[in-house]
Length: 170
Image 1 (tube, rainbow, N blue to C red):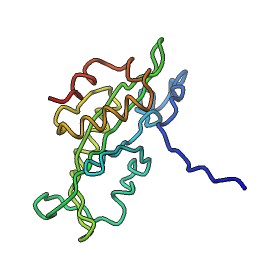
Image 2: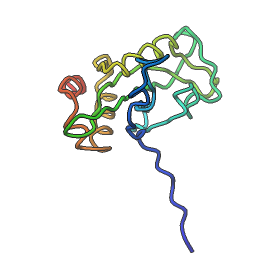
Image 3: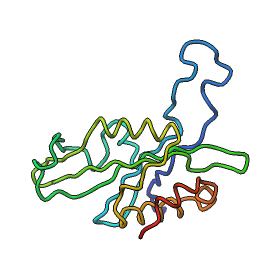
Image 4: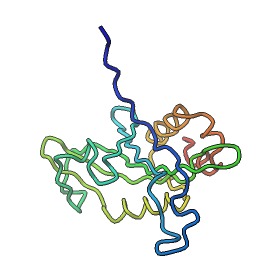
């Protein structure tokens, strides 16, 4: 009798540039092919890739009405949505853009807080190879750093020093 293996959803595979050798409309467009959304659950101390977050449909976000005012969501649990963009250098793939934005959720009242413009802008910054994680708390930084290191130590080693420095805890 075979046991069913749990499907492990990992990072998106780095693909060839879909706009290579294309000189027409859309040349220079940004692509989401190499971006993966990582949800950091601070309370649980874990990080996971949740592709549903690309369209605000992650497990954390489902069934939650998000409000624009943080104060309207009491006793909320903190999550970080981290946009991780991978790229390839001669030495191999690496984490090229990593940006984080917070959101809070109170499952009991089915309400949450997030700034949609911030989430979209951080996705854009990640695609453009920015590193913006220095505003995260130390616990969250440690969870994210461990996740990225353990996912692929080689990718971590080839990543920009700014990422490693900004994810160091004090």
